[in-house]
Image: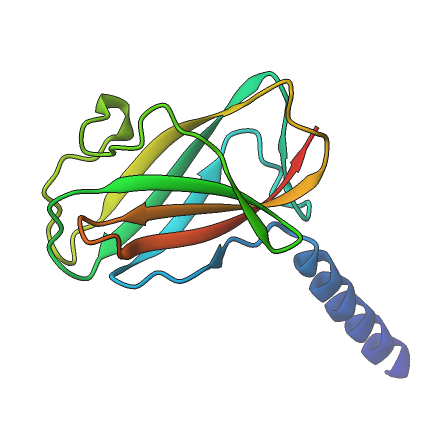
Length: 154
């Protein structure tokens, strides 16, 4: 009986340790919405960070629900290194005007949306671990959604 208890305890602890190594997408200050899912192409969610391979493009999807009606949406992306946010320029920051974003403005309160974007991972980016901060903002610069994406540039 004690062996069974020890085995069950070991399996439980092993499961907890394994889960703690998995990618965790954290909210970083969403004010007028919430994200329900985040997907990054090629991301092995059993690892601690998503691999972003230099000289490729990473595809991102953020499913979210705004808590109020929104007229305009812009995207801002930063690489946070040692608490210092460094801008990642996007070719289409105006989400409403970007045909590939899958977002058609205006947005309606309590309606689910699925935002899509491409993040170029340039060859000149250094190989390092970085916290990607992805924000979708409304016309008043309020965060609809803000999500931290743990990443490793390879």
